[in-house]
Image (tube, rainbow, N blue to C red; front, side, top):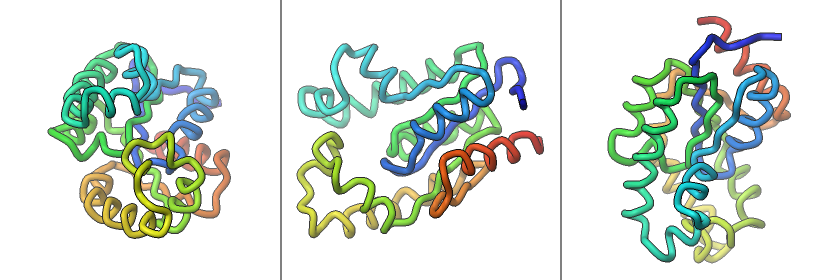
Length: 180
């Protein structure tokens, strides 16, 4: 079993529905360290769900708090697998903050068609797409992916996830991290 170095962080990023939480949880279990999801961390700190933060306080408030909690988590002195929100790398200097905190920033790259397939059934729980009509979802996600890919591609590692099981993706990430 591979063990990460003391205080090492592995950050997972990608579009919503790319599997960051699923892969993060499995990877943390494999590496015998803690898994932390930024959205869950924020919900606990704020005392309300992410959709409620968007609804009650707006996206600007959400993004400011997200940046604050991102820095807080990256400053923790412990082994950690950490997943961000899909938009986290795009706002402020968040991507640079992550890259300065650890070399282990991994983009989980999923195709547009696969993302639409995964996200369509769970739209209501996703504030950014909850009100997008089904027939416009493909175009909306495609536009977002295009806009965000500049930031996502700055990750040290890009893992293509289509056609792979979560276990295969975890194994690939482990191989990449071990090669440091």
